[in-house]
Image 1 (tube, helix red, strand yellow):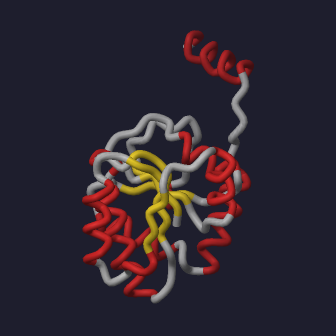
Image 2 (image 1 turned 180 degrees about the vertical axis):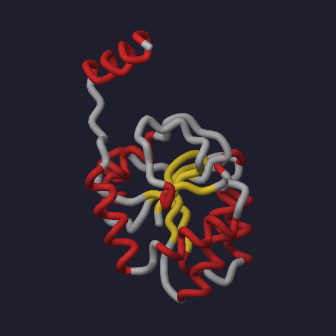
Amino acid sequence: MLFAGRFVAYKNLELVLRTFDRVRQQIGRGKLVMIGEGPDKEKLERIIQSLSSVDCIELIPKANQEKLFEYICSSWIGIGPALTEFNPNFILECLSFGKPVLLSRENGLSVKLPEEFLFDPSDENELAEKMSKLFEPAAYQEALETVSKLELNQSWEKVIEAHMKLINK
């Protein structure tokens, strides 16, 4: 599982760490990689050290785009757990590489995601349920198929057409 972004409180990374640890203890596999930097880095490192999954969680310094794309391509899933977000680029990049995502519901994303990819950023149980589900081979395969069918390309023509429909209503 991959996160990339700023290590700040509103990104809700403590929830991801607790939930990943819980799920990993239940299923016995998985790795969490978090790429970035920010004021909460030391706090996150302390939390990681207190978890039983400490050896399966890695914090990596901010990476250039090429290296980030390598991480995305080798990941199982991208996660965007922020309490508030507007059109998260990292999630769009994951989707563009065909990777399923877990994303907080209030995200402002321009792509409509299915419910199985969305979670309440204050509900650890919901995130754990959805995270666990994606470890099941059949559910993961279904998620890959869902991503492959998403309409990810946006053009000025599509934007204008959508605006014209709204104006004409």
